[in-house]
Length: 340
Ligand SMILES: C[S@@+](CC[C@H](N)C(=O)[O-])C[C@H]1O[C@@H](n2cnc3c(N)ncnc32)[C@H](O)[C@@H]1O
Image 1: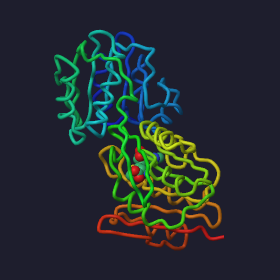
Image 2: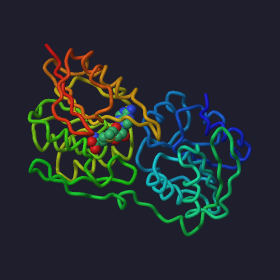
Image 3: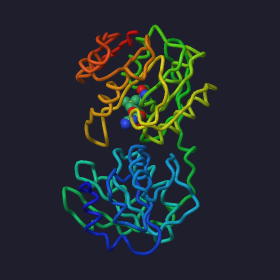
Image 4: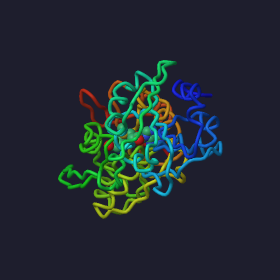
């Protein structure tokens, strides 16, 4: 199975399969790498990484940073969901390209491929569109020597100070990570609405920069924290946030419940409802459906979501009830307790 963008790569496979070293960054969970025997995949998305691993496709380790010990003749970039993420990818990848190495950029029109191609000109010369099909475009450019600067991810980390219910928190964030440099209003509403914080094992699911987990630990220092996200940049930021506030906690990669083990006294989450540029509810719906069996009796699920999202019937189905802790015109905070 190939996505539309991968099908466009497949149409141009002869161009891409020559010479050594091809890095495919931001690729979707499909079987493109089968067609590119000389290529190595790289992704910040743990669900895609798991897909590659299960099929034994060659990939770089799952990490926010690319290892710096290999040089590639060319890179194929699938246009990421945000401009900031694209720029970050280009900054990271450019020094890993050979002199005069090529960048191919592919993506759907609705993903903003045309705008991304314009930004490609900052890093590449001779940028040209080389194919168009399946609502997608494929662009090519040659890396500019002066854009191959040494790259240090930690230099791009922004630190902001938050005050929440009288408590100070330093938050580390990176471009492309959810609510970069600010506190999400839904998250704020949820944290304000919580009068009770469990001191047992607490899961911050979809932790982003780690605000929810770090705030919980400040409120309940005895809590054992697990922060989990599918995005490598989020995991990197959450670790930094805990470090900045001298807080202890496990920060790990997961796709939904895939890698989470053991049961929790509390699950606190501002869960995802996007995959790339598309609205996508399945991750959170499945997460809620399995949350009952992953809570100890008496444990709580607390979740904030846009008010229009239809999560209450699913929460009721799992827990037999669903309380609205707090709401405003945009967001609702739901809570349910696992009965004994
Ligand atoms: C709405 S953001 C909330 C971030 C953070 N908790 C906050 O409140 O600022 C949702 C987070 O879920 C993560 N996410 C998306 N899909 C996921 C999945 N399948 N498994 C785990 N995390 C996921 C995203 O990377 C993002 O960081």
